[in-house]
Structures are given as C-alpha cells and as structure tokens.
Amino acid sequence: MQNNATQKILFFDPKMDNQLKVAIVHDWLTGKRGGEKVLEVLCEIFPRAPIYTLLYNPGSVSETIESHEIYCSFIDKLPFKKRKYRHYLPLFPTAIEQFNLKDYQLIISSSHCVAKGIIPGPDSLHLSYLHTPMRYVWDMYHDYFGPGQVGKISGKIIPVFANYLRSWDVSSSCRVDWFAANSRHVANRIRKYYRRDAQVIHPPVETSLFKVHQTHDDFDLVVSALVPYKRVDLAVLAYNEMGRKLVIIGDGPERKNLLKVAKPNIQFLEWQSHQELIHHYSKCRALIFPGEEDFGIVPVEAMSCGKPVIAFARGGALETIIDADRSQGKKGTGILFSAQNTENLIQAVKKSDAVSWDSDFIYEHAKKFDREKFKSDLQYFIEQKVTLYLNR
Image (cartoon, rainbow, N blue to C red; front, side, top):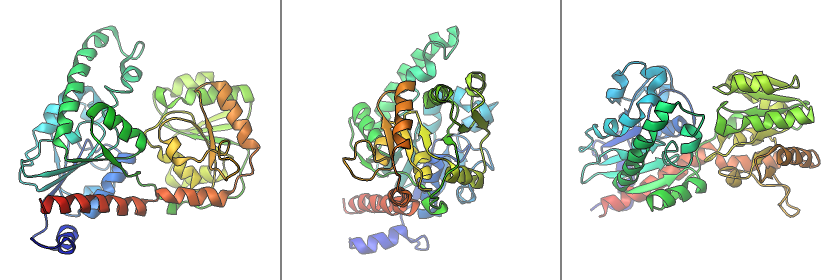
C-alpha cells in the first residue's frame, strides 16, 4: 500500500494514468444557480470526470461544465423537458437509478433532488454534497403542493407520489458513504430525515469579484426569484407602509401579483447582468432578505460590497450574518428579525438605519465564504475520505 502523500498525488493529478476512475452526478443542467457553482468546482478538481445528469439544456451552464462528457437519462428525451421537466418528478428516481456506474471507484453527487440516489458499485466510494434533502416532499411540501398551490385532481394524486418519493429518498440515502452539507441548517435536516451525519462545507461565493463601497444611494434592495417561499411579498407590504424606495431584481410566477400590490416607491427589474447586479449591490443602502434559505448566496454577495443585510432569522442567514442588534457591542454585518411579518421587518429596517456600519468589516466577514476557501475545504474532505477508502 502506498503512503498517503503518494495517494493524494495519484488521486488529484489528472495526468497520472493510475488515478481513480471518477464520475460526477448532478440533478439537472438547466441554468447557472448555486448548485452549478458547486458543480463547476468539482469539474475543476476532476477535469476528466464525466457528468451524469437527468437532463441537459445546451448553453445553460458554464464552459467549464460543458467541457466535460455529459450523459443524460431518458428524461432528456421526453417532450417539453426544457421548461416542464419538474412535471416528471415521479420518474426521477427510476431515471437516476438507470445509470450504470459500477466501474467507477469514486462517485461524487451534487444533489438537491435525486442525484444522491444513484446505485454505486459494491466497491465504489460515493460522496454526496447535499444542497438540501428533497425539499418538494419534506420541509417545503405544503409550500409547493398545499391548498391553493395545485388543482383538485393534482391534489389527490400528488400525496401518493410524495409518500413514495419520501420512502425512496430515505432508503437511497444509505447508498452514500459520506455526506457534506452546504450549511448547519441542511446538516440538521439530513440528521432528521436520514439519521446521518454530514460535514458542513459552505458553498462558494466569488467574493473577489466584488468591491467595498462606503457610500449608498437612497434605496434598499431585494434580489430573489419571485416565488412564494422567498416571501418577497413581505418586503413589498413593509415598504408600501414605510414609503421608502425599494428595488426588486428578479422574476417568477409571483411577479404579476406583487406588481398589483406594490406602490410607486417600489421598482421591479428583470434579472440583471452580473455587472448590473454588482452596481445595485454597491449602491443600495441594505439588502432585504425576508425568506428562509438553506444557505443564501445573495446575502454574502451583498456583504462582499460592504452592505448590511436585513434578514429573517432562520436557515443559512444565522450562519452568514452577524446580528448587530445582538452582538453585545461587537461589530455586525446585518440585522436579523425573528418573525415573518411587516412589523418585525419594519423594526429591523429602523434598527439598521441607526447603526454606523463598518463596510470593511462586513467585506472581511464575507470573505470567509470565498470560492477558493470552498474549493480547498471540499478537496480536503474528498482527500480524507479517499485516503480511508484506499487504506480500507
């Protein structure tokens, strides 16, 4: 058996012919979101590894990802898959299980739906970076499929499939040798639903692309998909009442309803280019983050511009934001409010106005979540587990 140092060289040097045979599994390739940022780092660590995925829309992800061999399931051949793929959710477990990965020594899944449910070979090492247990059937089941969210017929059918998906989700978790989670919030849910431990590795944020801005214009900012659980409606109602300017960047099914309710002091913009987004981060007074997220990359991006974040005190916000209201004289990076209602949000905005924010401190705090740190932490996690695997 070779020593550990040699093992690491064999494992991470793509030029070595005797490195482990590696496969990467990702739920689907349809856009550039947080999960794809994690996948991109995995592609950098393993430049030769093929990607197995349910479906792939060419041109929807980065060149780094698209430079790899990509293998798709039968979902990729179904009608309307480009935009309506989520309607095939009951078929996803079957689709992911049909990949034959028995010849790979190392399988790494990047999963928020079914990717962790692949069937590894008996001698394969399977590591899973879990963005969340399948939220559609666990903690956000009623947000997606509760009363008012689906029709009468769907309301009768969905509970049956949801029960099957929960059972499959739990049983397939046994196919993972080690989990990594993107936050303590997610690690707690992994323990709750799967009865498994997970190592927390916060996801990558490219903080180096942002710069500190000491001044601000007269507006606050929301950057969010406009879907119910993001609670952008709460921000709209609060700013309607306060009458101060709010800029909302994003799109989604809730846009039409929000536009009907919003007063003239609230401006809606479509999704913006990266440069325009940086411009709005740098010019805003504060970022408003009223929903609950597993981690939340947007608050870290705003803090990378030295801007404070006013956020609901649940989920990833508790791990990324230092609450100035509870820091006992120490510096903070934002204000957390404890209840999702307009009164609490308005109070938090007023508290933020009374704080003399240290933009440089906020920026330095954001750097703790930088992409390079994530890459280093992820690589160390993989090295540890592979060393155990090789020495078994």
